[in-house]
Amino acid sequence: MQYIVTKKEMQEIDGYTIDRIGIPAAVLMERAALQVAELVEELNTGNGRILIAVEGGNNGGDGLAAARILLERGYDVDIYYIADIPKTSTEFWLQRNILHQMGVQIHKLIPNKLIPDKNYSVIVDGIFGIGLSRPIEGVQRKVIELLNRMDAVRIAIDIPSGIDATTGEILGIAFQADYTVTFSLHKLGMFFSDGIDYCGKIVCKDAGFPQVAIGEIAPKIRAYDLSDLRLPKRYAGSNKGTYGRVAVIAGSKNMSGAAYLCGKAAYSTGAGLVKIYTHESNRVILQSQLPEAVMKTYDDYEGALSCIEDAMHWATVIVVGPGLGVDTTSERMLYELLMNAEVPLVVDADALNILSDNRELLQNAAMPMVITPHMKEMSRLIRKTVPEVVEDRLEIAVQFAKTMDVTLVLKDARSIVTDGNGEIYINLCGNNGMSTGGAGDVLSGIIAGMIAGGLPLLEAAKMGTYVHGLAGDRAQEEKGEYAMLASDIISCIGEVMR
Image (cartoon, rainbow, N blue to C red):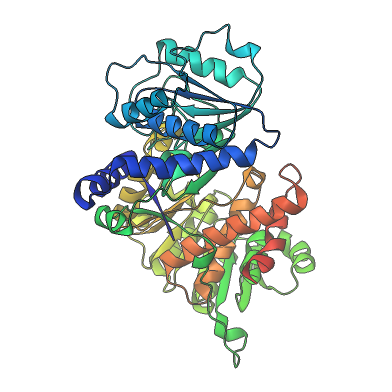
């Protein structure tokens, strides 16, 4: 388990470490600088020249300390101090004075005509850290523009200058990093908005913040790593009934793909039985694609309601929505489920589109449920624009889950899972190859399989989202991000869970 912190939380942890525990800021800075220097060494394979650009805050102090360490190790380092902020930190001046006593030259400003003439292999951004709260302008903007044009490996200290550490938004301009070395805890802004693209590969290194300080502040946002992989338990004396029955209500006329992907994902996650309820036109293709699934079909209104009645009596968990369509029949099917089901529900896709015009159904639902909207679907549910949802996604997710009494999986490049009560999970795995049709249907099936296996709804939603991302990463390794299909994600579920 790892924490993800907002700017405010990280500043509180830093303050508690220095002021309450008594670890000097200079000690933390030295630890951070060592981590920066080690990454530079690792990436500077040709032993080329290194440029470190700094401003007068603690981020700049980290940069100066890293420069000193690299110089002592024999590297050719140029340091440029922009010197355009009126207030500088004590730790920055401490590091600057150390370099002065060592006879190291620090260039006062970065002239536009100077840097392009020099051949640097690595550029280190120590201009602004997580404390930045205003748009970058003036000479600092010009410097960042210049650094972004240079042909070198670019490393950001803690977070790229210009990226808001909480929202991920660009504050005027941002340093385009290939790597970001961040300290002790990931920052929330690295995973949202522009932060995803500007941070490059994130390397999280220990800078000496003690666990008691982190525990005292108690960050609310968490993510999994492989040590957290907790799957539904399997038993030696079990049978197919031991691991639950997943009903998949999906697929309108001649729309079989979503039902197939969802059903197969549930089976691949360990569900004992899967029964697909779909339009009669999908029978033949689904029976050939997924012969392991039981099937019941409908071709009229009465038949559809009969399927709902059957599913409610048969299943231990029900998925509803993938490819279902939005019409009078599907609306009635969803109504009957939400009002009468006595087992948990996973609600996705077209079911969410129906709910966007019938939100009272959510509040009056008979059983607990997991809902899995992407940003557009969420915008419809709460009647806000997509940019409004993106801008305030965490607060919106928590409040919606709490108000509607649901477990929410808000899908995006970095999905959020919450039931509105305390802890928030953010999924850090997955890749852009998963931006393909059907990937969401796979996720719904995985979560349903986890519930069928006995995991509580919130844990099933978190673990299902994590397994989905891990499987996507494995598929990306095998197929590449351009060629990936949703079915490739399913093919890798077993390998990930094994």
